[in-house]
Image 1 (cartoon, helix red, strand yellow):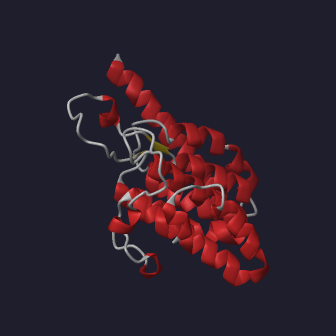
Image 2 (spheres, rainbow, N blue to C red):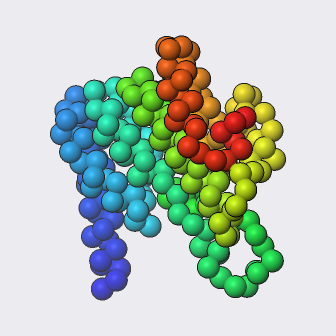
Length: 211
């Protein structure tokens, strides 16, 4: 019975992804956008099939088709992070750090960002900076087993030079570079938005936002 249930879930995931992908390709961006809430729920499922690759195509497709908000919604769902499942265990009481748990494995996570970021910035620059800032904040917060009182996230160890981009696929490094890249693109396109970008960074306490 469990296998049958999982098979039905898998079929539903595949059907919705293919339908949304087809609608976007054909130019029916509004109809494709209507499937975003359903696809966002499927992103939480452990059954991913080809979901990462399809989502990495859908997000820029929606953004380029005038559905910037839907694209950001889908990106937020696909890239959201959960606490390290090991953090609740008591078998390693001396370990103070943790690893944020993405919905897609590191390489696929990085691929979604790489393929989506340019179109997201084009569709809604400040919204994209805000999205990656919130994700980076989550990555920093979830990198500790307990609430961190200070502001040092130690991401400079993983990524010493943000301006050189990332050669790593680990989630914090990818998000750190994506946050910087989206901010640079927005300011380069319109220098008058510098203050608006700084206002997005300001509420986040972590040291990475001042690098």
